[in-house]
Image (tube, rainbow, N blue to C red; front, side, top):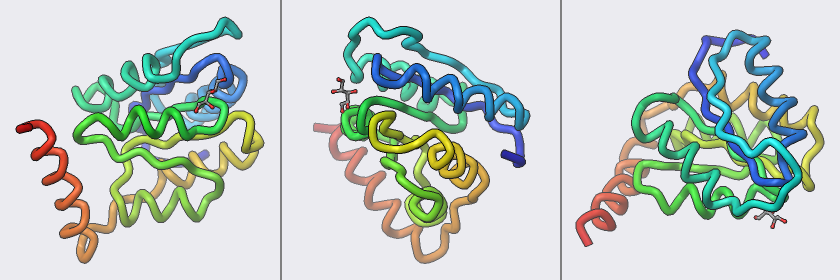
Length: 155
Ligand code: RB5
């Protein structure tokens, strides 16, 4: 993991602490600042609570990106994407990671600790953090996501 240092907030539910630790160690070794929002053990918790903690770090600008781990990554993505301004994607490989940054300007990466191995998760996160948003033809589409967020806020 070799890239421009970023501040990254990370959180998991009880399915994810082991993968979370692997991702934190790799990000720190690469020079990123990591805000660990928990959870840290096997006690059962609710993934929306940890998604909310990470999303708050991103939406307030304390972190540039968020990383969320649960059993599948899906519950975390569902929770995160309910928050206006968040564009969360479940990642299974480096291609999804690169393209969701380049095309969707994704700001939260979600992983399934029960569905992806640590090497693949690490490679995907490296690709996610290293890829800039392309803008250009994607601006109009991402702007429509932002407009939908604004409409939700107003409703
Ligand atoms: C917890 O058992 C599991 O349901 C959760 O980690 C996640 O996979 C939900 O999407």
